[in-house]
Image (tube, rainbow, N blue to C red):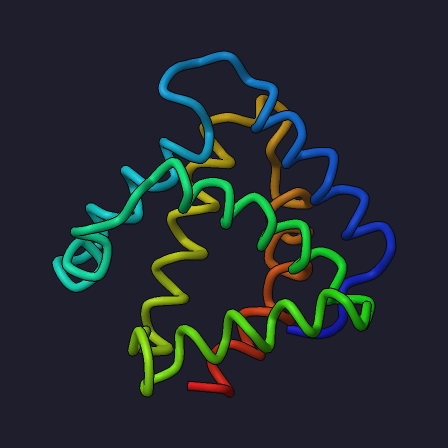
Length: 140
């Protein structure tokens, strides 16, 4: 998908902030998880014993690090390596195909929560997140 530019990172960050600031219930990240869990039985099974308060905090941090990783931040890459190891077949066994559902679910929630979401914004989300997603898939 190519490298994310500074403009992509800015568009992503602005959109993400609009999503997080949107007061509509149940909240952006909660909506994401509802969409994601309903995307496949395998996803629902992987999350059946999850503490979603903690998981939501982890997701917030991961989205931040994904944004930083597209520009090669050493701290962000260290975070991604830890998460990739945890998600590999040796631990949580998160198959690469599930990342596609993850991204589709995140984009659906963003479309619903960002009133200014358009094709350019979607491209920014995809560009910013693709680097980290590709990295996670490669470490399976």
